[in-house]
Amino acid sequence: MRNNKLLKIVRKLFMITFGAIITGFALGSFLSPNDIIDGGVIGVSMILSNVFKYNLGILIVILNLPFILMAWKKMGTRFVLFTAYANIVLALATNYFHDIHATNDLLLATVFGGIILGVGVGIILKSEASLDGTEMLSLIVSRKFGFSVGEFILFINVFIYAVAGLVFGWESAMYSVMTYFIGSRVIDSVMEGFNSSKSVRIISDMSEQIGEELIDKLNISVTYLQGVGGYSGLNKELIYCVISRLELPKMLDIVKEIDPKAFVSVVDVHEVYGGRFRKK
Image 1 (cartoon, rainbow, N blue to C red):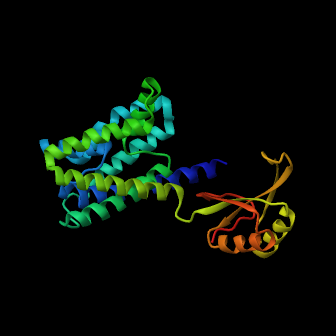
Image 2: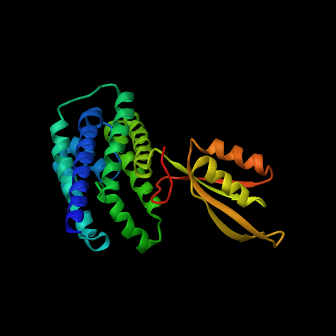
Image 3: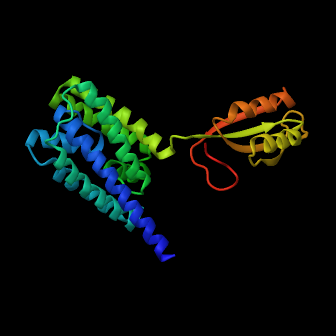
């Protein structure tokens, strides 16, 4: 058990290191040289670094430190230590890549900087750490003042990008907003997984026959659920299963062939564990 726990910690630290280096590469080589900023504490650090000519990596660590300490009771010791480590690696990576300019084209810097940034931050978040104190602060503020986490982060970032417009110019601020949007979408993809599966619920009077065909032809596991029709008041048997997106068209053909009137609900599923499910 101890060896397994130690191995998990080492694996997470490796991924945090990798994610922080990637994020530092995006900040140092794509965004910062072109006056394009990220949101949150990192964005504030980039503005202050430009205005006062302070070291960007050191500013990121200093500005995040109060939020890291604030999160000690809320998020636990391991999260705080992982987050502190991630910020230190990010600071070193950002400083290392600061003089390595990947491109001077604003559009290329925005798109590729946002993608690389999103991948790095997503890896870190998935490894139970964080790079931005804004999210930690939002958890506390939302509980005290009734704001949602998303509303607080949105308010903070609107203010940050308004300041960025005054400091770097409004064109740069607009590119920064685009970078933030691209980065946030990539973070979601990394967190949720690229190979999304499908959760399927089927309501039919021929559920057992459909279930047997799905097991036989698709080699998947199905579960029968008991329900009651809200309109008819009759007992209904539902089929629940999880399949890959490549198997979905074949599954729909099987259902329609057996019962054209069957009700089918399909929902995206981003992570699946256990059972007989096979990712393709």
